[in-house]
Length: 315
Image: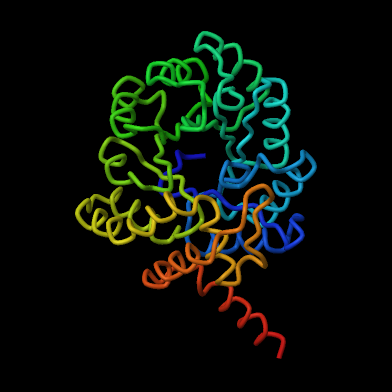
């Protein structure tokens, strides 16, 4: 597979009002993202609420998404786990089910349990045993195991399948610039994260892709592709136009933002997150939807238009 560029949003895990997996909504999310012209889809990430799912539920969502994507776009499966053996099992499942890529954070647990950088080589040797599809290394602020630029470069040189790194910690642009300078062709796929709140600085530093939520993929995708096509001024204007909405998502809503908007537009049958993540309060929801409507997000119309088209085809 050629090195992926552009946008690869994290898809939410769809739940019904009883907090059970909603496979039909999961399929609609996949179709919505394909219609939004994304370059790939990521599932089982933090914004997918992977931490709230059983192993059997993970398998259902993975199988459903890969089946619905039907090779129209690559699917990346996040497989992070503190245990290298369990991470390897997850990696093998993703590969066997037809994923195009896996994404892993370094091993950590909770707010205090981390591992020393000297153990990372052995961890990834076991976790990646038998894996041939590309790996994206996630440098997340959630992780208490710190990945320095030098550690990321060293891992990329040790593991040829490590072709991507998602950099979303503080001072991301400087870190991307340092990794690019030292890794070169050993790590071609540097990605921006954190809902694209630092998209243009990270692209200026050398990022070639963005992993965002599924809130506004058509907007961020256009900005990313415009930048990569060489029009940095227009790309910056496109990004700045939606930056207030990105910041509202990032600071006020978190992973609930995309669910609320996708539900409002009929893509999801419910905006439910799994307990103990609470529903969004009415004031925050009103502010989010007002911003989303001002920016004419595709998600607000996609489900309505799709249902209208299905109904007309049955007449």
